[in-house]
Amino acid sequence: MHTTSDHTVSVLNSLIETTLDSASGYRDAADATGSSQFREMFSTRSQRRMELVRQLQQEVRTFGGTPEDDQSILGKAHNKFAELKGAVTGNDDKSVINEVERGEDVIKAKFEKALRDDDLPTAVRDLLNQAYGSIRADHDEVSRLKHQMN
Image: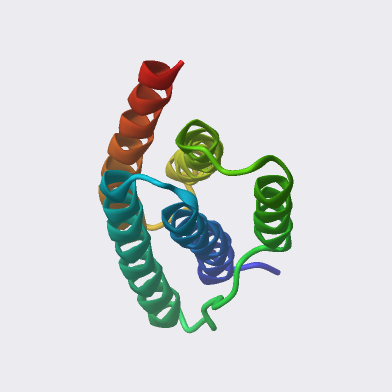
C-alpha cells in the first residue's frame, strides 16, 4: 500500500532527476557556446537549478525519504547524444539554444504534470508552484531567443 508520503517522495525524486538533467544541460550549454553573454546566462541558470535540487531534496527528507542525487538515465543519454552531435557537427549558438529549449520543454512539462497532481500536499504544491514560475520564465526566454535566431 502506497501512502501519501511515498507518492510525494516519488514525485519529488522524479523532479529532482529532471532538475539535475537541466542543471547539467545548462552547464554543457555554457561550455559549448561561443557567446560570453550566453555562457553567463547558462552558468547562472545551472546554479539556480542546483539550488532548486537542494530544496527538493530537503523536501524529500521531510517526508522521510531518501532524495535522488543523480540524473535520470534519459538525461544522461541525451547529454551524451548532444555532446557527440556537437563534436561531429560543431556547436554554434543556434544549435546550443535549440538543445537548451528542448530541455526546457521537458522540465516545464514535468513540473506542470506535478502541479496537476491533487494527491500532493499543499506545502509541496506551493514549493513546486514557486519553482515553476522560474522554470516557465526561463523556458519563455530561451524560446524567444530561439525565435530571434531563426
